[in-house]
Length: 290
Image (tube, rainbow, N blue to C red):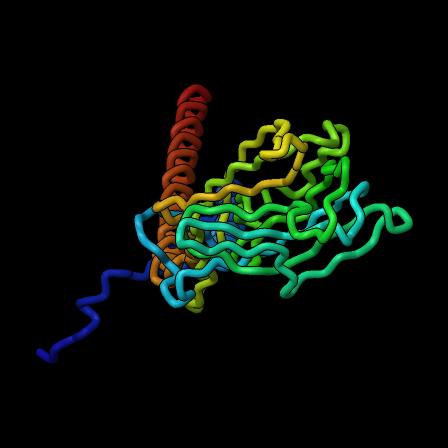
């Protein structure tokens, strides 16, 4: 007797003349196909979409920066002349710069009575401060007005990712125009290193920060009031990492197979139950009539 490979067919076929179509079966089949299509499109959308996963760890992520952090500052002082505005930097490594002018720009405001300071500079990865003041001016004004608006204070690379909500420009929009003109302002910053890794593995290094602030009157050793806008910073040892991920293809295929197989199985059970109940009801009606 020749070997017949068809013996291994687990999907035995039933001849069409042994099957019976019903309106209920047709209705359930249509609903089944619509349901499968809906779930398929939902899974396809999830497969195409990018998921962002975040994690925390202790490390210095940007080791190639040479221990430096890029800073971008944009601040307006509407009642202080540009000749009086300067940026000073100090830190615990002994750095002390007064009147930093590299990569900075001063834009006169209010017919020259005010000033908008825009600057980009670097700071060391150690506790320190940078402050906007009149310390570098040739002649100190009698009553310097330090009321101000901060448009931007950001550290590191700029991240424009919609799904990442963070405090990358926490002081943006800070308005101190109604404060005491002679008051000094202390902004205490806690800087948190942040890494963003896209699907290609490219990493971008930025920094978020939290802020607390206070106002006070500061006097020099001669008794004069010398207001300034201080940004005192310290770095957190904790790094936040955001990673783009996409669902693996094998998981997508597995889910689709489960959706199709499960839906058809459940629909078949429902159709079988309805058909069996219908046939039983017909027999009961025939028995009553006879």
